Image (cartoon, rainbow over all chains, first blue to last red; front, side):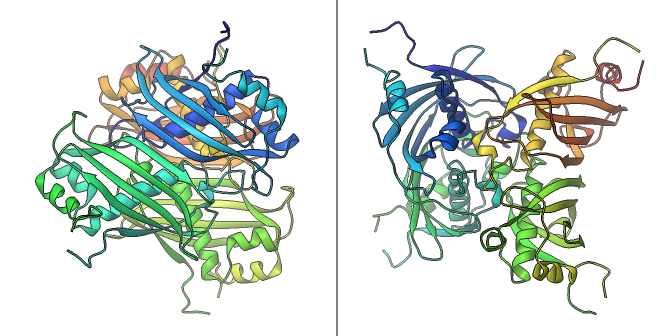
Amino acid sequence: MSEQSKYNDARVRVRYAETDQMGVVYHANYLMWFEVGRVELLRSLGFEYKQMEVEDGIGIAVVEVSARYRSPARFDDELIVRTTVRAVRSLIIKFGYQILRAADGVLLCEGETTHVVVNREMKKCALPEKYVKALEAMVEGRA
Amino acid sequence: MSEQSKYNDARVRVRYAETDQMGVVYHANYLMWFEVGRVELLRSLGFEYKQMEVEDGIGIAVVEVSARYRSPARFDDELIVRTTVRAVRSLIIKFGYQILRAADGVLLCEGETTHVVVNREMKKCALPEKYVKALEAMVEGRA
Amino acid sequence: MSEQSKYNDARVRVRYAETDQMGVVYHANYLMWFEVGRVELLRSLGFEYKQMEVEDGIGIAVVEVSARYRSPARFDDELIVRTTVRAVRSLIIKFGYQILRAADGVLLCEGETTHVVVNREMKKCALPEKYVKALEAMVEGRA
Amino acid sequence: MSEQSKYNDARVRVRYAETDQMGVVYHANYLMWFEVGRVELLRSLGFEYKQMEVEDGIGIAVVEVSARYRSPARFDDELIVRTTVRAVRSLIIKFGYQILRAADGVLLCEGETTHVVVNREMKKCALPEKYVKALEAMVEGRA
């Protein structure tokens, strides 16, 4: 196995807009942080998601999402979005996420998203090889 | 029982704000429609969610959510949010959702949320009996 | 003219997602209700905003917005979004808005948006004559 | 006049969730960046907005907002949120904002918000002296 870290950490700070009247973050907002996590994971591999859309004409559409909420995030909390690649094949990609409170490392939320690669007409297509290779190298448990 | 329908249908129309640059609805927005669905299901049973918070001092915190996206919703689509009660116990409630395009009945998204009942201090507590009874009567497969 | 009403009323209900930890609606959400208001005003004139984009290849980009908040909207409030056309010329459209609480008619928020018409390349272009005519007939103070 | 800078710069990166089907950022999202700007300006003065709520029992409710959009922000753009204090009195605070694209310094949006200080019951109250002093020192044109 490699010394290379198998996840990417991104940071976000909770906005007032993201809270609700229960005084904590509204649960749907974690999905946007998952998005931040996978965009930053791709950037850490040298890819810009927007370039995938422009240059390769592909998008990565979400087909499944799940999240388990363990402890609430609150306004102004600094959070770590820890993103891993769970699986990658030419037509499907799975990312895993942990949202941690930066101050004490407490795990607030875990989640997973599954994506299909689509072209500009929203039809399924194959993920170009350069992305497959780079993402495969991130898959947990690979050595 | 019962000819009585075991689900509640609510209607929403897709807002421009809910689309993204892929030209379809951003996936996190479906979770807000699930919220609309369960609020309207409670209203159909004679309960107002805001009154649960004010009068009974309880909230229904989301602890788990999952969604599977089958076909994209688009700007201005009218949608049916079909909500069912999957399970109800004193400490936990599970709702199921189908998002259907009203024009042709096509299923766009399915999901599930799991909730715990919490008091004003965000501690778990029991769901008052009147809600348990009403929700139990909605559970699919009960007769 | 005219007994004809010079505004269009649309209805929205406040979602839990739209509240913040102050216990009221987060102020940016009113801008999305303004959007609902102008889409429904156009529909009342026989136009679908999505068709303007598809058939005429034009969009109506927001270039200016202002809002004054008088009293807070709260979760589950039913609201009236009252929309007027303030001005229309071939290159610019101004809409006015009032957000009223349906239960008692109290004015919660007033606002205005200014739009330019843009083509698919986001360049300014003229609003097709059919829209100009229909919108002009809605302008307040015209007779 | 002082050498002290009279504004605070915060950074945000545009999320995919913040775009709409026009391919640019949906206009309401700039208001959330304004919020990030004023929270970070307060932090630069040694104050945490969340502590104002908890310790002083006050909130800063938005009563007026305006924004002028000059050029669209796009997905993944890094943005500078430049925030100034336009005016401060015991009952009212005005902030000004410029949203600049970090890559080339182009001004994308300008705005202003007006706030009243409210207590936990949402009644107007005076801003504690320590905040008045610190904010006054930020007001443009003061020397």
